[in-house]
Image: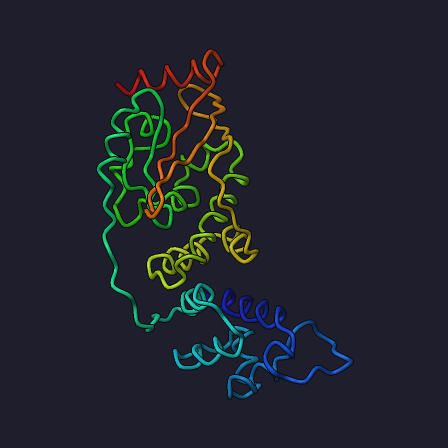
Length: 272
């Protein structure tokens, strides 16, 4: 992780201008962003020590990480990632975590959708409930531990689900953008910080796309799948939500009479 820490510090240093941190800007600069000595000055550590941190030749203490976070103007998600790549426990106070419960009306609606895949998504795109057709399309959600039953985790960590998405790059990037939108609404969510920190460490694509700050509140779209049983599927994806509740119903449908409709019907029939 020391190489990752050095690369992260270097990238954050390059992203800041002197005026961003209250330093005077000089006319001639050989590097983009801040110099190492400027970061060291802001963090009240020696230049030699900071240089060795970037080069991966020394481990940072929790207190040094805290001062570096302030010097580099890291947000909560970046701070979570910093602690993760440094191999340190994040000692920041945590909010009490709440259990998400699916609204009864949402469950009733889910039960009535027997011919098409449907999933209830909660905060952070956690998967809260599903029907048999969704299991046939995606995976056996019940076999996944509750703490890891999350749409982003499936896209990035579950190889069969990843292969299922014929346009994985597009779908995964849009999911990251949707999560970014949630982060704006609740930046202090400890579960969100943990999710972002873990995926940032594990996956370079997630790390890159999260850093781009692209956001999306899209409620519909088209998804292309390559299913191992019924082959290619082109499905319309719609997300339905009710005001004031952090729960959405994701429904996947195909146009009647289309090849995808026939294939989806066959898949649902096999699941019964």
